[in-house]
Image 1: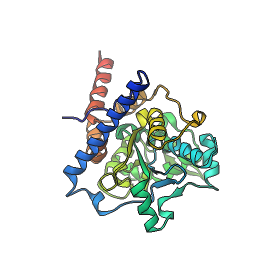
Image 2: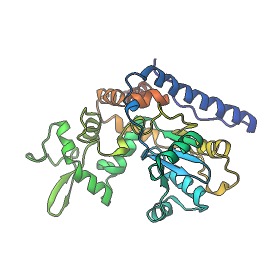
Image 3: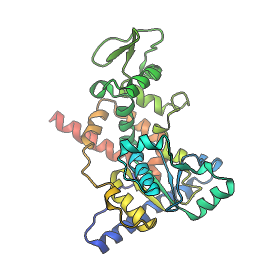
Image 4: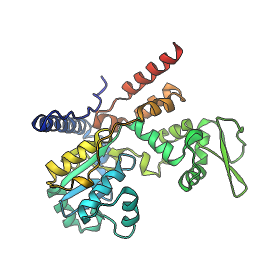
Length: 319
């Protein structure tokens, strides 16, 4: 049976809202506990404790395990503003963190690390892997619909040209057809093709480390040791604004400062996600489910539910 989908927290009055938030956190923690109990003998996390992904707020005694494309910029900017008493936008945050960065747990001595792990409030943010991979692809590659030729998309399409091999093309020895399925751009008199979503999905789900040098499409569970560190709060990108308010106010004890907290807003990306997944065979979604099974199980997401939604969308088109 597929695990339940994350549910947005319904705030129906302060007391009822608090009860709903507590129940939701209990549910999320129980899923992690159950997963770790069942996987304790084989879980590769037991062989390492990656600490470089933990960012530290000594002011509020918080450890945040940061993984890309899970609302990490929103969360990091909020933590930064709280720590340094600033009110930077996300763009300003990136500028200032280059010169005054947040501290990482690895910047402390071993004893200081253990003290913080044992006493600070620990936060991790997860995201539906299917949604996260779409966000990765659009951000780094763009595809024919969203390629804006910025430095990042140009660089990564050039860097990962060999992902095209997963769909049967060796770009080092063959030319791809200049069709709408294989759009291209030129740099320094060289032709480069936009990596299609299908090639990206096959590459990141391939059983090799060849294309796994980017943490943004790594499993959250590979870099946040959920079975070794007891997290005090598990946030979801899908309910991030509510979750961050709950964690920092009710768990970390932040008072006031309403102007720097993110506001909840309606998410518009569901149809875009389904439109992108309908471009590839359903078996590719099953590859994602297998590769990202740990994240699906730990955080209560369901690949089957997304497949069902995709089938419903396709059936509407057929009718």
